[in-house]
Image (tube, rainbow, N blue to C red):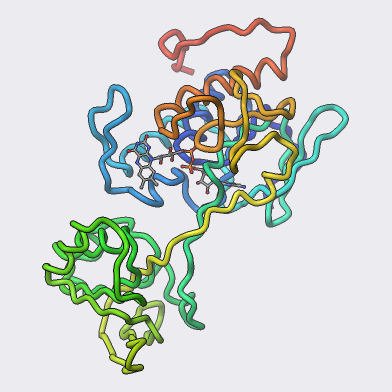
Length: 334
Ligand SMILES: Cc1cc2nc3c(=O)[nH]c(=O)nc-3n(C[C@H](O)[C@H](O)[C@H](O)COP(=O)(O)OP(=O)(O)OC[C@H]3O[C@@H](n4cnc5c(N)ncnc54)[C@H](O)[C@@H]3O)c2cc1C
C-alpha cells in the first residue's frame, strides 16, 4: 500500500500519453502531482496496442514510433518528479468537508488530493485471457497477449491464436522474423482487412481453421508444446513451439468512475472549456473527455492537459489570477 494522508495538489488517474503530458505541465506549474496507473507500465494505449507503429499526426514530429513517443513522454513527465503509482485501479472517490478528495484503489490504497484530473482513456485495458488452467504460469514469459517487440520472436516457432485484424496483422509481421508461424482460429472466416488476410494466406504462415488451443505443456514458464484441436473433426495435433501469442480481443472497463456523479455521455465525461467536469475540483482530459467537436487524438490531449492543470490551480487558489506560462520562460535549471 502506498503512503497515506499526504495531500497532493493534483492526482491524475491514468498514465497514458495525455496523463503523462498533463503531469509534466502540472509539475511546471509547481503543483504536487501524482499519477495513478492501472497497468504495470506507463504510456496507455500507445505501448499496449502499437509500440512499433509510426505516429505521424503530432505537430513538429514528422514521424515517431509508439515506443519512442512513450519513452520521451515518460522522460518529460518525470522532469518535476511526480509520484507514480503503478498497478492500481482507482475505483472510488469521496469528498471531505474541506474539499479534499480521497481516492480508493482496488487494493485498498487511499490517495488524498485537492483536485483530480481523470485521464483514463475509455477505461482500463484488459486482454481477454486464454482459458486454460495452466495458462497463467506461462504469461509474460512464453505466452503474451500483445507483441511488445517483434525482434524478440526472431528465429522462434510462434503460435498465434485469434482471427481479428490484429492477429492477422501480427501473423504477417512475424512471418519475416520468426522461424515458423502458425495461426489457429475458431472460425473459418477471418474478420479484418481483406488485403491483410490474402497476404497471410499467400505467405508461409500455417493457417489452421477452425482450430483452438486445447492444452499447453511446458516447464518453468516456457511452453514446449501446444495441442490444438480441430472443432469439426475433434482431431488433436501437437505443435512444438517457443512462444504463444493470444489475441482474443480485450475489454475496456471504465469501472465505477461512471458512477462518481459526473455528467456522462456515451461512456465519456462531459467537460466545459476549462476541462472541468460537473463536480467542482474534478477535471477530465484525453479520450475520456467529451466536448463539442472533440478529436480523440494524442495531440488534442496535449492541449487539454495544460487547460485542466491551470483550472485545477485556480480551483486550489481562487484568489490568484490565472497567469499564462510558456516552457521557454520557465527556469528549468533548479
Ligand atoms: C491502434 C491504435 C492506433 C492509434 N493511432 C493513433 C495515431 O496515429 N495518432 C493519434 O493521435 N492517436 C492514435 N490513436 C489514439 C490514441 O492512442 C489515443 O487518443 C490516446 O492513447 C489517448 O490517450 P489517453 O492518455 O487519453 O488514454 P489512454 O492511452 O487510453 O491511457 C489511459 C490510461 O489510463 C489507465 N486507466 C484507466 N482507468 C483507470 C483507473 N480507474 N485507474 C488507474 N488507471 C486507469 C489505463 O490503464 C491507461 O493506461 C490510436 C489508437 C489505437 C488503438
